[in-house]
Each structure stands twice: as C-alpha cells, then as structure tokens.
Image (tube, rainbow, N blue to C red; front, side, top):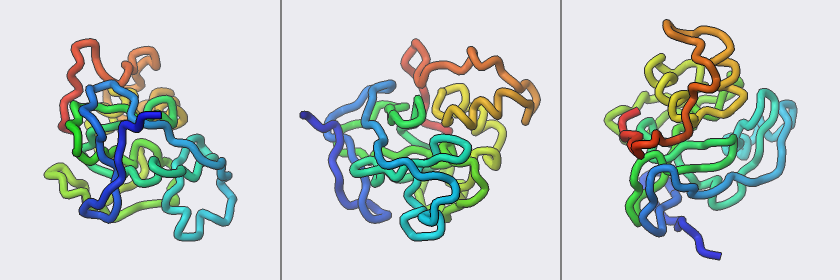
Length: 183
C-alpha cells in the first residue's frame, strides 16, 4: 500500500509531511484508533492531549501517523466526516501537513499554547466556539468542522447571518478548486 505521507522532524518535534504533491480536496489520511468516552481517566493523563473529539462526549486516541499531524492557525488541511484529513490547499511534496485543532474541540477541557509560527497565529488553541466569528464562518463553509460542532453552530445563531442552512455547508473545496490559504 502506498503512503501519501512521511513522518519526520519539524519545529515542534515530529510531524507528518506530504510524500507526494497533494491537490486541494485530496484525502490525505484517516484518523483511526480506539474510542474513548468523556469520563475515561485518560483525560487527566499526558496521553489525553492527543485525543480527537468525534462527538459531544466521545473521542478517539489516534494511531500513527494521524496522531503526529500538528496544529496550525493557518492550516493546509482539514478534517471532513469527523476523521478524514483532506488537503485545503495545494501541498507540495515535503511540506508539513497541519490542521486547526480548534475545528475538532468543543468540550471546554483543553487548550494549548500555540507555536505554529503562522502570521495568523492566535497564540492559544481553544475550543471552536472561542474562535473569532470570521474564522468559524470560514471553517464551517469549508466543511472542516466536526459534525457535532457544526450542527450545534448551525442550529443556533452565534453571529449575524447565522444560522446557515446545513445544506449550504460546502464540501471541503469549492468547484473552482480554490480554498485559499488564509484562515
């Protein structure tokens, strides 16, 4: 089986890199791992920092290489269908693949000092509901917000113009193929 990713050193430890050129909308990898419930003691351990929230009270413990995908406040990838990482922008071979962890978190239990190095760095990675309105709108329009979070956001207003009809949330990349890199 051919892998589209490599694991290697990066500025925050280890990271996941494109093993070939990836086009916007291309599937990169799928997050897999054992299911973890809200009240599992792992939340209080160092391993708890690696959990991926997949539902209001459910998580998975991602296995490699997914567990090594790092955060960026200006991501080149995003999660669709709760576990599928897709390219949001063209990702050249050798470039680190990163997604915004805030698009997957909404439990109030977790935050992370951000060291992504992006000019758009927010300094702190927090739950989705704490993101600036324009960032939330962009991620929702790209379809890269966990389903349980998107349903909650689209079911009640949190900014002028919301709620959007759920059907208006587009697939990760528009038909023109442009997603832009600014988030």
